[in-house]
Image 1 (cartoon, helix red, strand yellow):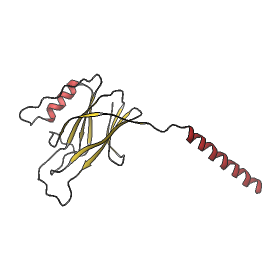
Image 2: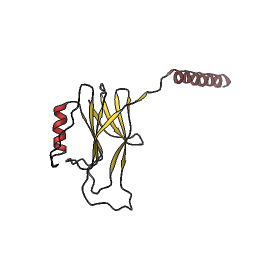
Image 3: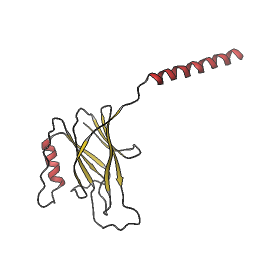
Image 4: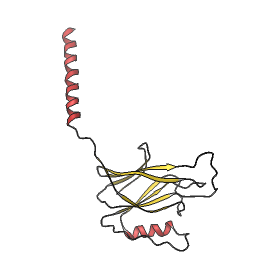
Length: 168
């Protein structure tokens, strides 16, 4: 019985030792901050998203079509900003359709995690005791990022929960 306890003890000590060596030598996952430019922020887009979402554009024609649809009820007609897609991405972040005013979407941070581009956003709601206009709104952000090479773009909330993603 004593020799069996010694063997168990030695195995446990060796396991802890090997685990600590692995942890010491492993590199933590790197998160590199990404700079971005807000091209447009608004509360009225001609879409019917019901929940937070993200759209990614890597092509001028696709982006222009989306932009014109997004502003189809706007007078005068809005022209999309010119974008150099050889080294940029355009992201459309949406809070989703809301039945009152007072909702916003804000970026906390944009960073890379391996080949994923992560957009950490705060989805704000109006305070419960506030007066809000009874109007359908669609809070959104349109941003430009001067990077390429990502295979996935994620929209996450403050807790890190993935709200939406797109594979590129």
